[in-house]
Image 1 (tube, helix red, strand yellow):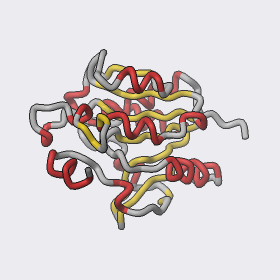
Image 2: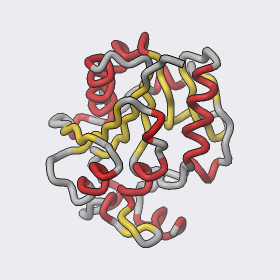
Image 3: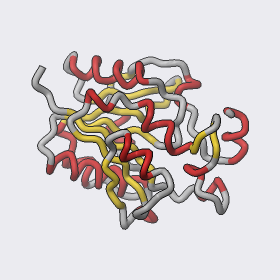
Image 4: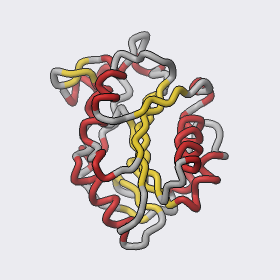
Length: 190
């Protein structure tokens, strides 16, 4: 096929609604929450794989590296998710990739088949493919390289929201897109 894809799992959030604990270290179904998204991504389909994190030596880092994810430290993580999106897009630009899939580390239930479906739809000439619950479009999402510059310039907590709104939806059950932001959400899904 000749196309070169990258994937970035965003894991640099401040977890404010989760309390003082690092939510990615919280146990979810017998393992740290932060390991699940990396395990679900079919890394063999990607030329490059990154996890965007706040600081070096995150407790999940050995697992991420074992799964072939290269940690990228986001020194501006406190400014919002868009800084992680921008860092991932810049890395994808520098690697001269054709597309970048962005996933969230706190969405542990997305199965490999959904990542594959996003790629399949993207390969069928949809320049942006996204996941959705009803009308709400969200990550995981895959962007063609022509959007890297816009992603790299995103700011605030909006990240890629404007581009995601333009994407071709790849249907999936809403429970796959459960986002764990609170201890209550973690407990409800465990």
